[in-house]
Image (cartoon, rainbow over the protein chains, first blue to last red):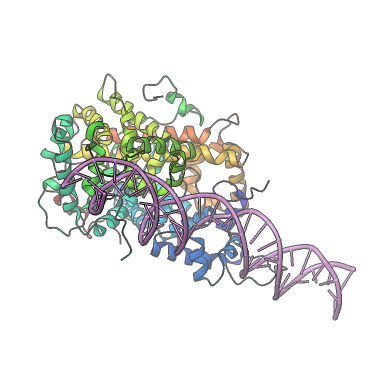
Length: 285
Length: 285
DNA sequence: GGCATTACCTTACAGTGTAAAGTAATGCCG
DNA sequence: CGGCATTACTTTACACTGTAAGGTAATGCC
């Protein structure tokens, strides 16, 4: 079995030990040479480089630390585990959300998490299904649960809301970052991008309006398509739209959750999924 | 400036022409040698390979087509444009949603899109901000707008709902795919994964319950943590949870939208973003 | 018949994660 | 105190990625 790297990260207990062991957790008197590298140092420089360059590469981290890429493998199982550890660490930047009402606190929490994910774009690479279960992520989650505690949202729905908010923050952060990258490169601003696109559409798909009447009506009457509006160029229109979209999504989720429309999960962990059977109209082959 | 590859895809009008030009769009009598490769063929094999192997690599596509990787660049500007074209093409797999009520139709639509994104995991690589504006994506969007037309949701909120649903589908599909990959590798099923994780937590973070009371209460009283329930092993627990999470998120979004809590965007394209200024309590530095 | 145009090929480069094996420093144990 | 297992880190290497630069040959227009 030459496969020594398991799944997303390493040994389950190993990663958790790395996440939770405090500063004085180094077992004294080991046999080998004195370690010049330390896990906190590795994580700090990895985060710094990843934030700066926009990507996480073992060689780049190693270069900054004046060692080889392979040297990192003594402290970290693989790249995935490194990302997990970085992910949890930056979550410590989240502060306790403030606000008069629980909605304000949730909004504050959402804004913080969104900003965190925008700052650290590489977070998008960390797996969604398996929680990292480190102190940072856990504390962030705890803040949200505390804010939701007085909302009256049933605990079954709270889990859905929590996951949806985390997901929305990821999605929103990615949109914001992509909005920042693209337009400057083509030397045209967002408005011109849309105008060029629309002109090309009119040329190659002349029956567009007839084929997609609902879209046409929505973008004509309303404001959705930036090309329809008149705005001074140079404004980061796309990023503004992305931020706005995030705020409104959070509002939508909270409005839906407080309505009590979504029934709480009934019994065991599998019972909730019973209504998602192959016969349900929602499930499509 | 050695940067010759612009943004996500190539020339804006170029990509749109490729997207919308029908089968008889080839200009007759060109001067060079007869082309043996064709764009539809490239896209088809690229989709097939990407679906099979889970990733999109120019060399793999070229190998299957018995040509070199560079040969693809005659038909496609770069990898990003190839992905855009593939993305739009597979959206033609979406059928007109059926159902008695508009909610059922939206649910049917959501389930189809989720399944599409699960089938084609590489869709997650396609940019979020810039719509591809091809016939496939556009028709998919039109289906949703048609279903939402009779919902009574104000058109300003409809845009938010649309973006949130697309985002939720992406997020959900990624979770489902990740849930499928991970557990088999560790040779333990999902339940064991949780149990090991929890055991490690109890060892390295003995004050976990005191530190995170809200999380503890929620996972103890409710069903959230799969480790708490008793289930036959071998069941794809994580994937079931991910599917369930998606369904409930869709319900939440629709419930929130029909409530009319989210006010419609007032005036111009910039006016909607005015309430997201730096002074707003939602915006955090 | 010459020539511009075009489709595809060859080579090359700068990256990526990480497996395998080597080197040297350290502290435990006799 | 000497030997040795243990450990931190290095060296080399491999397979793989997108794509820039330049070459070759087939085609249709003049």
